[in-house]
Image (tube, rainbow, N blue to C red; front, side, top):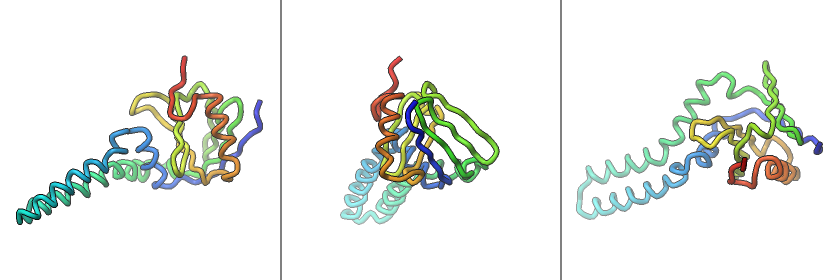
Length: 165
């Protein structure tokens, strides 16, 4: 068994949108829609179509912000989402403890993982609706991030790849 890596964090609503971008590729490319709408707005503005320009700007803002809205709503509606989490990761899997629950997840429960700027996302399936575990990088010291990467690669798969049966 590997050395245990202890994690400790309180989830924040801002943790979820970044994870959504890893799980839903369309969210990662939303900037392309924004660029297209801005180009349309500029074209409309040069032809003095103020109303069309206003609509394009509103659509661009909505296209950019819409993916984040479900994450914030889901977080605010879920009473467990903001509970403090203590977890440990070792060669057997992930052991998580919330205020009133404890769960052991073996490595076989995870299908893939992604590393993002502020978090690690452990996916429990390959479908869009399959659950995921978000581990913010603030949950443990930066000098131990490589240990988690090594465990995830060894027991799940390389970053961004799915577990092979």
